Length: 179
Length: 318
Ligand code: SF4
Ligand code: SF4
Image (tube, rainbow over the protein chains, first blue to last red):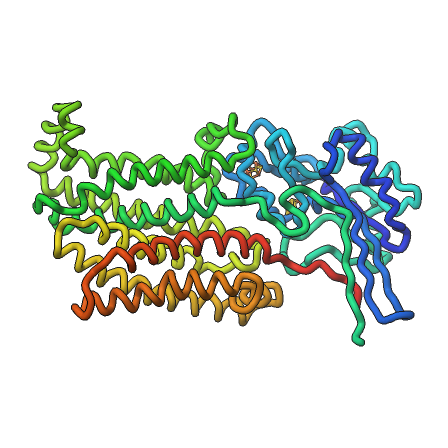
């Protein structure tokens, strides 16, 4: 059984927001809402500044507070790929999952249900890459099966240094950032 | 100047950014009303259990009626909060073991029959005027003291479950450090009991009960202070997000409302007034109970709002 994940090279990401626009177009995200976004972290003292730019989204965590708090089962982990999804017509819009995500990756869609990144599962099932990965002009994003040791993502994680977001929150995210 | 850390994000989702504010007034109102009803069920259940329903002016007769009204108002507030209202029935086609909200939905289903059973022990006159058959039920029930006792026990147990779940609901959301204390349910249960004791004290016709509840409320208020100390000790000896969460209330943005309204006006002042009253230094007035009730409501607002504001830090550069 695959476990889908992403590896994102922060050394390549320039924060161009192409992934943000691609997601909005592909998934019809209403104006003012984001399933993915750009974070810029700068640290130091002029002129000695370090910079990390990264594109963020739901981490499709392996430990999912957003799923365990859901009173209806609308938030669930899909069998194939371990992708975390929301079944719109089971969601009552109680917002518990939005509160439960330490990454604040969810929001309430204007139509009332909880919404977030789906890893473009509708594309992945057709053998395509998620829209954000497909569109990135610097090729900084990689999508694949983390359980397959021969996949591109697994090999990158073996050969490069990386971090995950909020390791202390204990959610075991499946998006990794190469540094 | 030390090294600076600047983090910016392009995300700007409504009610999520710049800080989480998904839950507005409806949730604290519901948590407060649910907690107070929980306390009232425990009090009424205790009176039934100890056979006080034999007294004609026992508070256990009006408590369940008020409880049904307040709980329904609270549930209406909860309903108003739902963003996908047409699908609310989805709560009742499943039971999700790990979700306190799912537990709560089912607990609420059990609470109503327990309250109604309590009402039936001695229905009010306007009820029996409309539905004379209620008198028969009431008579039959009162022939079985064992049954009345068990209705009392059921009310106490369900009251405890209701009061506790309102705290567990928040404390399982580990993403919000302020809520991430397993004592939150104790705080909400005790605060609910305290508000309930104050409320019943305000309206009790029976002198003994009124005096008993004032004394009990003093106990609840002292325990509440103690639980606060424990919660802060826990948070302050934890990780940085938890320490900062504690400081939100102790010295940060929420400190004025926390110290003045929750601790001062909601606990200390009524505690002093009621201590004097039960020792017959001053007479009982409505002031202390009203302060306790208002303090309980503000407590829920502060915890819900500050809890959403508290968060983890996502920084990676060294
Ligand atoms: S990032 Fe948040 S919403 Fe996504 S799986 Fe993890 S906890 Fe759930
Ligand atoms: S908002 Fe929807 S998906 Fe999220 S916890 Fe509530 S019912 Fe589940």
